Image (cartoon, one colour):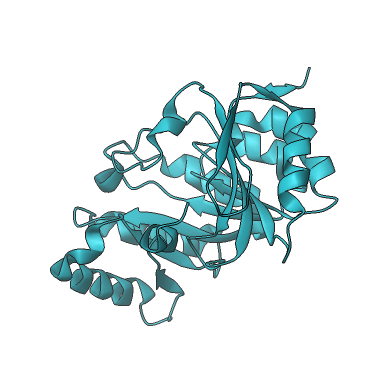
Amino acid sequence: MERDAAAVMEIFTSLQGEGPDLGERQLFLRFYGCNRRCRYCYTEASLKASGPCRVEQTPGKGDFQDRPNPLTVEETASLLRIGGAQKGGIHSLALTGGEPLLHAPFLRRLLPGVKKNLSVFLETNGLLYRELESILPLIDGISMDVKLASVTGETSDWEGHRRFLETGGAKIRYVKAVVSPVVERDELHRLAELIRSYGGDLPLVLQPVSGSESDRSWMERLLAIQADLRGGEGRSVRIIPQIHKLLGVL
């Protein structure tokens, strides 16, 4: 039986602050819960099992009202319809977290109705390939975040990432890796090889941990890393910080 309710952390409107869709206006559906514990995570509340769901009342204003969790499919769909009917339009619905694929049964029920009005963009840590397969026809684009052990403080699951790449195929728009001054060169080259072998010409986005931009020696090293990973083939490797953090928006 499909799950008819989920623990939703918040529903709000903002700009996409990461990756090649930078600056697009999106409606965000953020779920509670994650299967990783990255030491740099800036959404610590999403690691909780649950809490109230914050729902923004006015786009961009941050005037939230709490609703009790879990939200039903019908209640979530109604809130998304209201959020999607905005002047100027919404580029897409962004599923984020935490890890939204932990709620795949709920998404199988929710997304068919959502897709009538909005395209669906999935932000994921790129490991739950079986769950992805179960909702892949309902997803229009994927941001795949590869977790590097030297940065996250956890063991990397390279096999899980490989299978996720194979499963997601052409719907994966880019691969992202959060990097910091402790990142190891061998990990980055392994990631570049993984993309080359299974992701073709997918862009690789290097996202510096928020706040590390002020370290000029690290920024100099990051530019050297970019040049190294591009190699003689001129692969697409982009350095893109979290712009919404720099702008002070959600």
